[in-house]
Length: 423
Image (cartoon, rainbow, N blue to C red; front, side, top):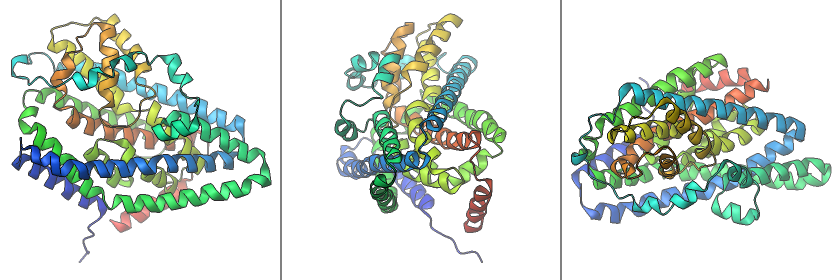
């Protein structure tokens, strides 16, 4: 008889289920937030604590290992091109789904509890000034210590790439520095494994607070939107990402199997940052070179949030339909072009899609107040789009490794076999 292994994935699922039960039992009771929110906050802080040291150390190691600026520039160009194509497809899928399923048509707005949009409105001025040019200007840090403190991923990536090239250029003198960052990366992966042991408690707390605050009732009036978002996300994963995976000679089901624990964790916390270190580690184990993984995955967290861009397109049309606004093809193309810019350079943290939508809706004449109606269920929708973001970035590392002709298929097959034996 096969011995049952109570893995991290099962522990997180138990935490998720218990959180839902506790939240439902104590629905409307502020004490749940008082006692559980600090536990959830500690977990998110632990994750944020490890992300920057891991990204900077692995990226410096990867770039210094490549040591060729021309080669790195080629990889960067291919990566950005791939990200732009896939996120544009995600926007188109979102627009098509909203036009076909019409989730906002016939919604009785009197039954919708108007959410609190004020906390998001304060960020509107910052979001609207987020132009295409500024996204690229902000890639270059004016103060790397400030960028590290603020977790500005694009600026950190830029500095790490330049620093890595510098280490490669000075040859023997750079070896002690390289050894330091190798030690830092190894130590941080150990820290990550310890932090992950706290994940079930963090998930329990975060879900418990969400359910106790909004309750299951908040889903009913907006049920059509929830079904539309989840259905479209599944279609995108299996049709679009699945198609890309097949073209690369791999399978989306293999990827899901590899990232089972990370998918559950990302879904529960609604933050793709929580799984960044483990995703990078597993993509290396699957056969992607360290330098490709350490460049593509962190960059994807700003440029390749497929789930978020798909949702933003769908939500914009939903709000327009809710208000009875019929957007023309020209207006929808305009919306797509705006989203192609505003969705870039955003961090993989909960609720950031709200800021992007605030920056986008006004440009095509959709009332910003419409966002207040979906504020209550944004967390539930955020959970789905986070999973798609994680899968999209993981697949991007495989695509780039194959495109560079450096994917280790033998290593990948061995890793899948070892997972099958362990299951």
